[in-house]
Amino acid sequence: MDMQDSKKEIVSWALYDWANSAFATTVMAAFFPIFFSQYWSAGSSAESTFFLGLGNSIESLLVAILSPVLGAIADRGSYRKKLLIFFAFLGAMMTCCLSFIGMGLWPYAMLLYIIANVGFAGANTMYDSLLPSVASEKKVDFVSSLGYSLGYIGGGLLFLLNVLMYIMPERFALADGVQAVKVSYAMVGIWWAVFSIPLILFVKEPKGERLSIKAAVSAGFSEIRRTLKALRTLRNTGLFLIAYWCYIDGVDTIIRMATDYGTAIGFSSESLIVALLITQFVAFPSAILYNILGHKIGVKRSLLVDVSAYIVIAVFGFFMTKEIHFYLLACCIGLFQGGIQALSRSYYSRLIPKEHSSEFYGFFNMLGKFAAIIGPLLIGVVSLITGEQRYGILSLILLFIIGGVLLAKVDDKAAQEEVSRYMKG
Image (cartoon, rainbow, N blue to C red; front, top):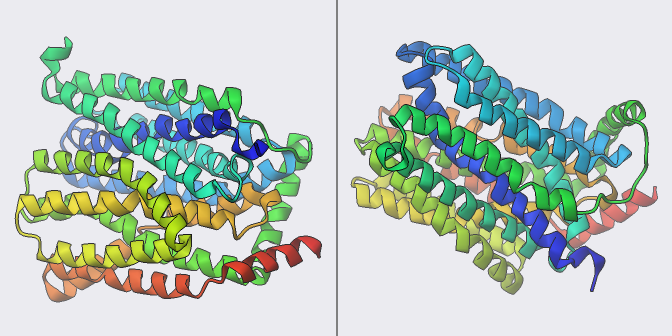
């Protein structure tokens, strides 16, 4: 068996998605935004919205700056696992600490949330960069899909338990919903830390240079400049990154704006939680099944199918009027969300030099963090001009069309030849 395809390493690697998805689902997507406005900011809705937005912007900027730098440092010093452990446990610890923040203490809550998000994203950069060393090119699509599918089911299961705790606190010997949310934060932090252990124990650090931290930092900044220059030479890699930025911007905008859109057209908060759960559990098998499609028709073609499906989803969102439509929309998003994320990650591994995977995945994650910038602005401008939010949702089609056209122009074989020439000279 190829040492890259060790079952123990593959499962241990994929379980980290199970570990950190609890933070993405319970904290980022659900409880923190609601709890921040209703509890920590003590009722000032305008200020709450401002500070929540400001905190997310600061966190996004920090991660966007850190991701490529950390990637370059990890490549030059063989610090992938050490940095992953540091950032994962930093994020888990800060999440647990949210349980101790009292009512009205929003500055402390926001500070902990920002640090937890930096931990989440920093660890993800290292996690993604380990993929090429864990899986051979033959299995990389399956392994990437396995990670996302375990993430959806793991995050979904804990989120389901946390929602039940919030709705029926007395059944769990909790005083009220506030205590349920605080206990949920502690559970997420512990879950994240515990399920990171298999990766720590069984996934090997890829061989590479063994520079000191100081030398690795210096070399890392030098490699950032080199990577920017490299993307001029690696034309197809750069083209894919631009395509990815466009279509993943549209995907993330739909994910982030769906609940706001549902609220705007009168759907209940309960239906929004149900829709989020539907998305999680539909995405679980879909991420794995989409890997099969990738093998049958090719990864790039599968991605193009995904992008086309999101065009249909945007159109469906335009005509949505009932809660049952919202549930169907959640099913559709779940069907294609895991596939487009998993196959984008694995397809990218074919377009980069494996010796510099952390560095290049740093840029990949940076673009992912900058995603959902154009989309919300596009929705806002179109909605303002037309006076109708439905046209705002429909405008996302533009991002998917641009992303799809650019993706279609990416040449896999030419990309590999460009990587080969780049490494030789």
